[in-house]
Amino acid sequence: FDNIGKYLDRLVNVVRPRSLLYLAIDGVAPRAKMNQQRARRFRSAQEVREAKDIQDQVIEDFVKRGIKPPDAKDDPWDSNVITPGTDFMLKLSTYIRYYVRCRISTGGEYYKNLKIIFTDASVPGEGEHKIMSHIRLQRARPGYDPNVKHVLHGLDADLIMLGLATHEVNFYVLREEV
Image (cartoon, rainbow, N blue to C red; front, side):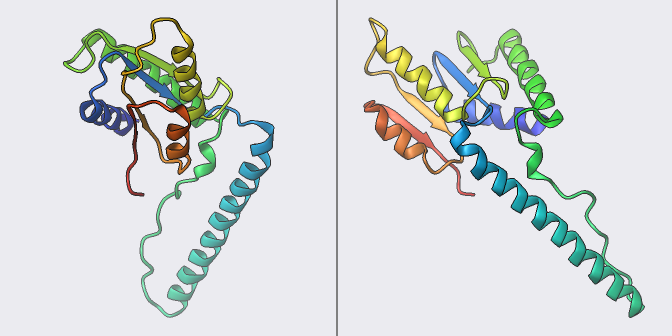
């Protein structure tokens, strides 16, 4: 999890938020999306099993030919652990809470006077929609500054559409090539 903390520090260093840092992890998805996610997870698990079977066959073939097989990777990453309610997600949430407390207490140039909101997998909805909901609530408040700048970071392709839907003048999407 230390790499997650380093990554968050890097993002804060790049974006340099002045008033609010909103960290949101996907929670339980809406019912309409659950079937899609379930199918994707099933496919992923099936692909992992198939890859393991192929790896076992290759190793067996190497042994039959008297060739030393290459070292097998220990426990390949199972993306199914990134699901609300899993032990991994509970540990991740605990780590991020710890990270946030440390950053608030020790400060640092970019954390001074910064309000940090963290919603984990126990809060329903996708992370980016939780953030968008917060932005909409802020816009509805009296005295909202229409010149406030928003930066949304994530891997989903729909971030651009979500940003456009806000009609905010200063809305930026920060994405990395994956």
